[in-house]
Structures are given as C-alpha cells and as structure tokens.
Length: 384
Ligand SMILES: Nc1ncnc2c1ncn2[C@@H]1O[C@H](COP(=O)(O)OP(=O)(O)OP(=O)(O)O)[C@@H](O)[C@H]1O
Ligand SMILES: [Mg+2]
Image (cartoon, rainbow, N blue to C red; front, top):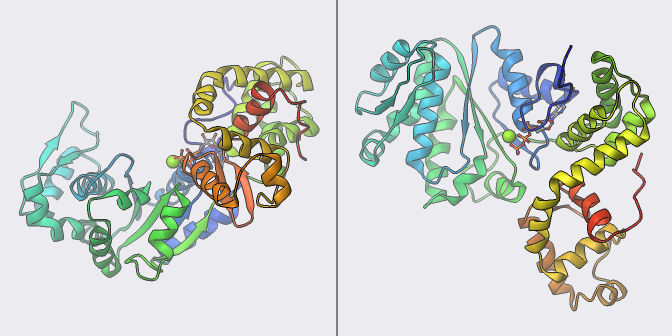
C-alpha cells in the first residue's frame, strides 16, 4: 500500500503526474521537430515535473537524451559552462570511463578538473578555470552538438532558471554568444525554462535582444479542476480510503488549483481521514498547514510595509480597480503612483502576479493564513 499518496516538494511524475496532456504533446512535438521551447510559469506550478515526465516518456528509446542544467545560483559564464558540460557529458554516455574519454576527445584544449566519486555510474562534474573558458569557449559551446552528432542522438538541453543569465556580469554578451552557437546546432534542441516571468519575457520577447523569437513560448497554467478531482479521489482509493467528488473539489478549490498547494492540502486531509474523508478532516488539515507555515508567513509579513499589507487586504476584499478615488481613500494609498510601486514590490517579493488586468496570489495558503490568522476574517468559502 502506498504510504504517501500525495507528492509535494519533489518532482511529481508517473502516478503523481496529472493531466498536462496538451503541454506534453506540444513539448514532444517541438522536440521531435527540433523546435526550441521556452517554458514559463510561477514557482511550484510543475515546470520541472513536466520536463522530467516528458524526458522519461521520450528517453525510453535512447535516441533522444535529456541533459538537465539548473542555473539557480549560477552567476557567471564559467559556472554555466561547467554545468552544461557536466550535464551533457553525463547524459550522452553511461559509464564514468566513457565520460572521461568523451571529454578528452571532444574538448582537447583544456585539462578540466574532474570530480569523481566511488560510484562508477555517478555523474561527472567538470571544473573549468577562467583560462579554460577564454581558450575553449567555442569548443565548449559546440560540445553538445558534436557529441550528439557523433553518437547519432538527438540531445535536449534543458536549462532551468534560465532568466538567471540576466544577472551575469555582461548578460547581453553571454546571450549573444549562446544564441550564435545554438542557432547553428542541428542535433540539439533547447528547452529553457524559468519562474521569473518578467525577466524571461525580457529575454525572449524584446526585439533588440539576442534571444528574440528563439522558440515556442509555453505558459504553464494551474491544473484544471476536473483533473484534480479525479486525481485526489484516485489517490484516496489506492490507499483504501475514500473521498467524495464534492470534497475533492473543495480541496482543489480551497487552494485555487495551485499544483503544489493542492497536493499539500490533499495530503493533510488524507492524514486526518481513517475511512471516508469529511469536511472536518479538510478543515483540520488546513489548520495544520497554517500552523506549520506560521513562522514563515509571519516573517514575510514582518518584511511588508503597511501600504503593501493594505494592498493585500484590498485584494482579499475583492477590489479590482485600485486607482479609483474611493479605493485610494478607503485604503489610504495616497496616490495612484504609490499603488504602482506597491504592485511592483509585491510582485518582486513573489506574493502577487499581475497578468494583464488580472491579479493572482502566488501562494493561496498565504492568502488564507492572512485572512484567518492575521486579519481574523470570517472563513472563506472555496470557489468552485
Ligand atoms: N502534473 C502535475 N500533477 C500533479 N501535481 C503536480 C504536477 N506538477 C506539479 N505538481 C505539484 O507541484 C509541485 C511542484 O512541482 P515542480 O517542482 O515541478 O514545479 P516547478 O514549477 O518546477 O517549481 P520551481 O519553480 O519551484 O522549481 C510538485 O511537487 C507537485 O506537488
Ligand atoms: Mg523547478
């Protein structure tokens, strides 16, 4: 029996991966036809899970290989090339011996430092000096293409948190370099993803930027309600517990269909269920989560200014137009210019996301916590 029917905080693949049929199809089609893809969504929507799921599905025939790189905390070109080189070498050959041989054969001008542990199948980590990069930049950038061609495979180079190249010392120069190398490659498809929408859009949609029109832009949305209901009821059933569709619907609704949060609340409800789930189990599960997150949320609140908190309260009250004189006066915003600054600050802090005229809370549990524990408002009925 499955002891942990819900998955959160880790990649959700296999039985834990629900829906995303359209996105999987589009990704597979892009990869098959060599079209680059740019995948964008807020944090914890399932970018990594989607990529991993597609990698598992497509990687079975061994003609398509996925090299995965994360630019989280990578701050310069040298570190980026280290990670790309390590990932590409590891993805294209399976033993340490082969990896070392490939590295020597395809990057002749450098003697990289290589990290090797006791496990012979473990990944290779390549260390490069700045001199290596200066001397062999071109060779390193061509390595994925050369390897893929030599091994007669299609390589998918997946780069997570790609917007981080925007923080490199000379971001535009790096982008020019990458674009020039990548657009010539025939055996490598690029899958670039990230969670900072504005930075990603700056890189890929501005006509004066090197990556303008580099590939197919895919925005990942939350998961649809009917898919959640099916997933939650299935997962309960698999563990010999029951939940009705209305309550499964309430779990997803309470968390506004946010992938990570729905899985977390489903798990908390499941913990309080011995036979058939009840509203009381859901309520108790939600209380547990709010308890768990209180320290974290208190810290976030401590870091907010009074006008920022008032803005969130107005959001919670259902205000949609913030610059009418009535709203400016009621929430003491002062001027509409200040409202603009508050919006930008809340977006930078990853609390809200403004999509055109529509604004969403990035963490639905934080909103519930503010309403229940901070403002002590009456309990919100979930939106079905
Ligand atoms: N297709 C899916 N089906 C069910 N749950 C999912 C799915 N995708 C994601 N989730 C849930 O969301 C969580 C976060 O997924 P994942 O780490 O893939 O998101 P991410 O967008 O890469 O996040 P981050 O920006 O933090 O890296 C998973 O642990 C899981 O609980
Ligand atoms: Mg991720």
